[in-house]
Length: 159
Image (cartoon, rainbow, N blue to C red; front, side):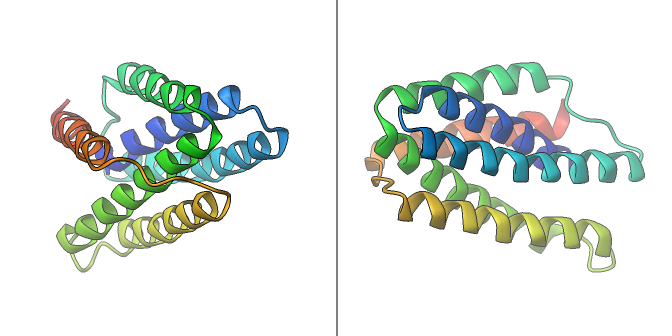
């Protein structure tokens, strides 16, 4: 659950920076709405960590700063690229959540419910970003995003 909590910290940063960089007021509101939905996820994962008597990652400020920078860089390339970044991010997150569901104990109904709802919400965010004009990112960028995500999830699992 710590890794999922870190993911929600990063989502807050990504959407905040993308809203800040957007040139379109309607798209800015879109990013702000998605950020609010991610705030729910953040609260759910934080609460579940407490219930499991676990703690958040001590590196959360670093994760936030890195994700904010990545969102700002994507936003600097324009709204279509920024939206494409959302599409790819949410697709990768959805895949991670799907694999997480396969690893959770069958009787951990609380964690399963959280992860299942988050997965549906992430899919919805990707669909909205695609419908709003998100451009597909180059394969090299997608691979780079997966590598960064793997480093983050592996580190966050332990620290």
